[in-house]
Image 1 (tube, rainbow, N blue to C red):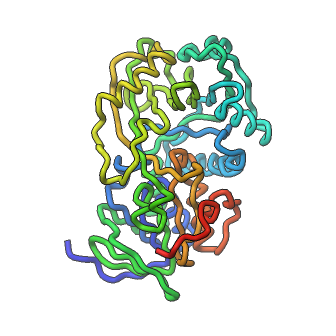
Image 2 (tube, helix red, strand yellow):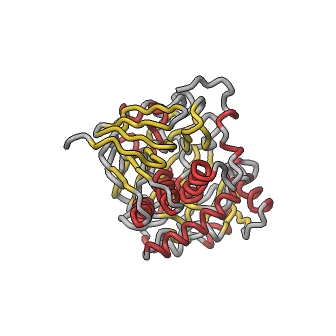
Image 3 (cartoon, rainbow, N blue to C red):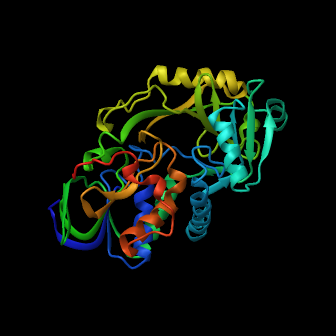
Length: 385
């Protein structure tokens, strides 16, 4: 295909995954002339926005200040699924499980108390009676929050892109950004297919954000593997009987979801095998050790689900040093906004982050408190790109 003509837009969004698709939709709905650029298909399975189901939860042990953003995200997910006409958010309730003084249980309970969220504190025996798919450590505690559930990531991105299209946005897939520049007059983006100019640029490139900005030392991609295992007792792992969960124990921090979309109970381990590097260097094929690590935990904590493996998939987390997001202006480039990385817990926030990005680049400021995600918390001496 020949190179595209030099075309001017109000805003270019590079990376049309969770955050980028939401930003395209929100900007287009505000009347902006929007170009979205994605190096892979839309949606795709090469980044952090795939895997059939993704957890959403209000009880947020990572930091209580996320809860106000989550409340708005819930509103926006419900609005999007109403517009799209099919379920995107499936409620199951959520369990945050761990030692009584551990980060997961204690942080979840703090969020519930601080934000007056409906919740119940459960012992291991309580969980076993109510949700028999779980086999908790005897001294573990759990917070059950009824608003938790899961999102359908691939369909959610489709919904956001279709909403962006309906509002006039242009989305280019299979087009890789090669480099960008900005000056007082605007921004220029060079891709594998052409050259584009705009008033503003939004970078939501996930694991590739370090290649496109000065964040290479602050945004570290990490290989993750998700596993789906056939339950011996499938009814115990249906959405109406098995809540999404986060589990902290001596073997690590785990997360999982009920059977939905494809066969099998889904489980993953935060930080998996600790494999950090550039995204193009990872092995995207699951390995026997990946399965064994996940299977060992299924056999210990979810023995009724420890049947044959149904599926293994590789994805990526892109981690900041403190585990919080980066949503800020690119250092030295007032026309460029960064929204990444999300350290493995960002998908649930996609619509509200899209809204915040649209407000930042279109209105000049956001109604949302984004101070937790400011870049200068990590460094005050970043050089311009």
